[in-house]
Image (cartoon, rainbow, N blue to C red; front, top):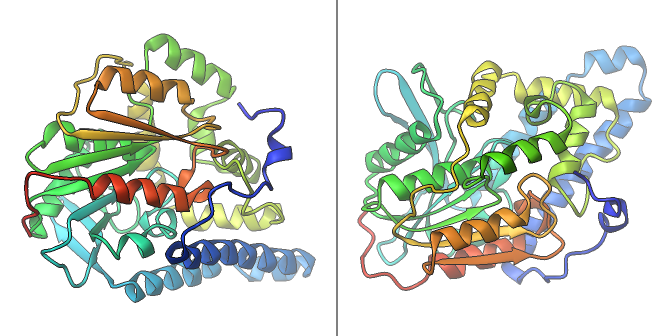
Amino acid sequence: MIKSNYKNHREKEAQQTPPPHSMASLHLWRLLSLYISAIAAVLSRASSALSHLIRCSIIVTLIESCLSLYFIFLGLSPTTVELDDHTTVHFWTSAHRRFSRPNLVLVHGFGGNSRWQFLQLVGPLSRSFNLYVPDLLFFGKSHTFRRDRSEEFQARCVVEGLRGLGVGRCRVFGISYGGYVAYRMAEMWPEVVERVAIASCGIGYTEEQKREHLGKLGRSVTEIFMPESPKNLRRLLNLSIYKFDPLKWAPDFFLQHLIDAMLKDYRKEKLELLEHLLAQKADPDIPIPPQETMLIWGDKDDVFPPLLAFQLQRHFGPKTKLEIIKDTGHALNIDSPARLYELIESFSLGRSNSKDDI
């Protein structure tokens, strides 16, 4: 649940000063938030007729086009891999791959596709790695006609997609729902995944912890993470982001159009992904990945409390490092992108006994 002192801290600046090469992406994110809020404020003062004529879907399309151009500017290119007649996986990949650089896969969470979630990370990380940034199934341009909604199937599709792109070995970072997928990639394909970093993820719960935490949310989890109303969207943002609210000044009608524009595609399938995740029996004795592993958590995470991170570290054992980022909520990529970048880079550039096979 949201802490009582949440509002007193939301506007507080991050204690870590962003390194110079990550400042541009940080400013871009804040400028994007300001831009959305400014447009919303203007529209809220317009006539009711205008509010019906101007659809948020147009704004979202323009923003997504800008994000795509930004990724291309950073040297990434969109690539679609047809796994079979039923499944297609879309990636953003480094256009000019270098043998001297390791391969790094970034797996996004449930809050949006890869462009929205990794906006602030791809810039600095592209300096040190060959990047592979997939859209998970039913996000962005990835989809399947198969009925499997498991994280294992998501992981299999990412790994098969990487093989289709010529990637033999890689390091992996996954956040939230993407953490489940990254964990399965590491556990099921140790010959592919050299190192794995998992952030803000609910693996390793006990049944008692699961019931207790779901009870604290006080309502259907699907209503929160797949919001249909401005009220639930605001609750999702408040639950996930600790330092600031990017849509604080946006009026409800704008948020409703935003929901309609961004969450209408594959809504049924996304709900099935959530329902599959919730229906699984909690397992505190999950298989231990053989690779070196890093766990990254925000100390103010209200989705998956930091207690779970310490519990998971003890279970995984001595090959696992744990980093807790101060004054940071569930969305580490928004609250503390500079510190998150530093941790991903330093861990993923650690010593390895094997070479990347591109």
